[in-house]
Amino acid sequence: MAIFLSAVCPIAALLVLDGAIGEVAPNLRRHLLALLGSSTIIFPVGLADDLCNVPAQLKLAAEVLIAGLLCLAGVRISSIALTDQWVLHLGGWGTVLTILWIVGVANAVNLSDGLDGLAAGVCAIACGVIAIFAIHCGEVVMAVFMLALLGSLCGFLIFNFNPARISMGDSGSLFLGFTIGACSVMCVAKSAALVGLTLPALALGIPIFDTLFAAWRRFLEGRSVFAPDRSHFHHRLLDLGLRHRQAVIVIYGATLLVTGLGLLMLIRKDLGSLVIFSGVLLLILLLFRAVGAIHVRQTLTRLQEKYADARQTRGERETFERLQLGVRAVRTPPQRWQAICDAAEQLELAWVSLQVTDTAGNQETSIWRRADTPASFARILTVRFPVRDLLDVASAEFEIAVLVNGSLQSANHRAGLFVRLAEECILSKLSLGKQPARDRA
Image (cartoon, rainbow, N blue to C red):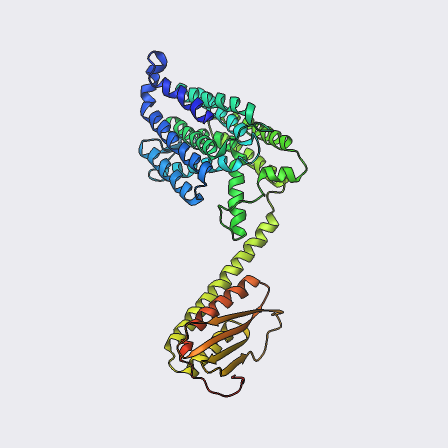
């Protein structure tokens, strides 16, 4: 609340001032009003999350919607000047890029708020960099806005630095990230200079890359990208033995270093600025590699495993769909049992046992066994499940043994597919004899 009010009130007062500064504001009045309005909307979204834990998907949808409304108000990137002669016109893709950038920065700042004073300090540096760029381009009002936000963050840090007496919460981090992203877009929209995006990207380089690597890491692990973990950049620093304050100061220093090098792009007007930007990005990646946040070999291994698992799962799914057609075509009890045996064979089961008990207490056990087990399958996964809601029997129970070849997840998936096929076989119509238990091959 303190960050929000101390940043928004000065710029809101600026819009109603007369005089020299008031004469500058009319050229930006519509965009500034849109910026203030969207920032005012995003703040209660974060506040609601602080108070009652809004689902991550709903919060993300709200961010995209508010960023889209900002684009409709004219705050979007329409072109980027790579050099004086080479200007990239984005057209409709400019709106997509703008939304992705604003939402990405908002979430990067939100995820970086893991240590006392971390998000506030990094955002303060980003505000200072954008203010410098705005002054360089003659955007006085934008510079005032960024300096007002910088001042609010400096005052906030007095109480937020470790040990923190107040915390930012999602209301503060979402507001900061959204506002910084939107202000950088406004700078690019006015100047069309690529440096308007690259400078804030470098200032927020650690949070942005941390967010990208976190999403990538969770994807490789098969978890939701919204799932929390303890593998962020600041967590890595703590794992290396740094204390809370030391980790925050190290990130401050790294951010000042990369932004200081990034300011050299203001001097160059040609492709040299892109060379500087690429070099600084490489430096950020080396920082992540140094703290152990990037493992190239492990990543490649997980990618290969994920690709192999996906290919195997797709093959198992195709087998299931083919077997399902066969199951739906059978009519008699012997045909149904044969369909179950065929399913067990093709889904790589070691054996299947079906025990059926009629209402008089008579039992019949049908067993299928694989003729030969490949040497590559060293383990089995045993699963027992009942078949309920039968018409002419009291109970029926399956016991299956699934062959495991390295991946237990694949065996579990094949077991689930077999359960679905077995339940679809209309086992209630199986005729029961009074013969003793026997094997049916």
